[in-house]
Image 1 (cartoon, rainbow, N blue to C red):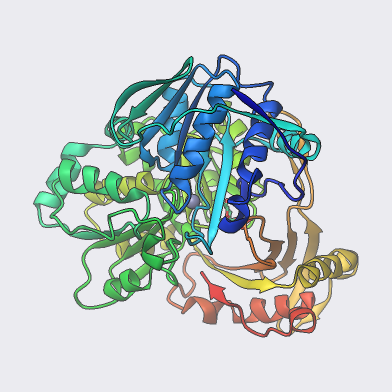
Image 2 (cartoon, rainbow, N blue to C red; image 1 turned 60 degrees about the vertical axis):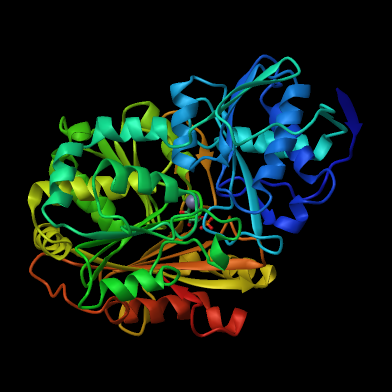
Length: 541
Ligand code: G1P
Ligand code: ZN
């Protein structure tokens, strides 16, 4: 075993979801090692502990895993459970952590960001409940990175990642496991597989775009092999280190071919996609895209149709920028609803305490208490289970939902890679004007209230501040401003726009059209053009 002298490396600050950087930063000598040692130090050492390790298969995934194996061995870990070939979807990793009652897990992914030597890499630590480390722990990891003087790494050969079974690395055991099997078991406990088989047997057709990312093997095993969907249902199903040079982000922009298919006369009944590490999902019906905010609301309203949720839900939580559609369902069902900051880590306590059953974010994340991460394929299976029970099209389900609860028109506008200073200036500009905004008229919108969101965790009493600016208009529309915490280049300004059309109103407007007024008011209030020179977003989801 070797102890290697090192020195703190600046900027190893975990963001919304772990540490994300350009791959070339991660491949610098000591960069990954410093961070991994800081994880172990922050949790009181790795001695005698068991961890799950896996990643989304992007470039550098296998090299990073070999380093983690050697460091875990040198730090005295008892056992590592690793997905075959280093692959584990984020929800499958969360499940293995819980199932094996491990001391946590290390997940290698930059989620929906592209992969490759000139693209992005990421690493995060999940705690024993299976969820992303809460801020107390990510703060402790960051602190360790600022004082680190040495790391420990065993001077041993690389392990074999391709064959299932147990091997020894010094005194440590490494178990290579099938990445899909246990996850597959879990899905069978939640959904009516017989009914889903009957659905496909009756001619129901779908396309699942795995975007050359980690969900390919999961979707193929479950949809095609177990449920009998025809071969070819899963497209781009082989994980590739560069995701086939794509951007594995399941939204209408990056999953364009699927969108085009679903809007065409050849569209199958259902379309879905998942991201780099398998925690995000996109759901699209024939000629209708389902916003993630609506998807959460529809799932909440119909979850009882799936066996795993037939007893009803304890509550629903959504991140603050997500539309209020799920709140409306929770209110009618008489169950809890919570509004949390952006990032899945804020749902963990609510799930652990049994306060909520479903959670979701506008960024294509939906999940439940079955794991402690969002789960792309789970969301797809729950939709399928609902479709199998209700025997309606996706469009019919949405129209029925909007007629009952009203429609929250919703879109997120991203201004990517703006200078960091410009991003901070916009947020400061808003912060300094919050008090004077109420009453101001911008075009057809009048500001009703404005504040900066902070969250008091009802379970552990922790407070998270600076979680985004909220501007509520008298019309019922809303604009939210945040800077991304997962980007790796400059700053990304996210403007989240919503407008409520109650039951009986026109629900057939084009989304951007419906949001035009609130968008113009938001741009004026934040002086986006003056700060960035930009008039239009790079991406609208
Ligand atoms: C983004 C999403 C957020 C999600 C996170 C990790 O974070 O907005 O909802 O939890 O990715 O998938 P952001 O870049 O906005 O900080
Ligand atoms: Zn992801």
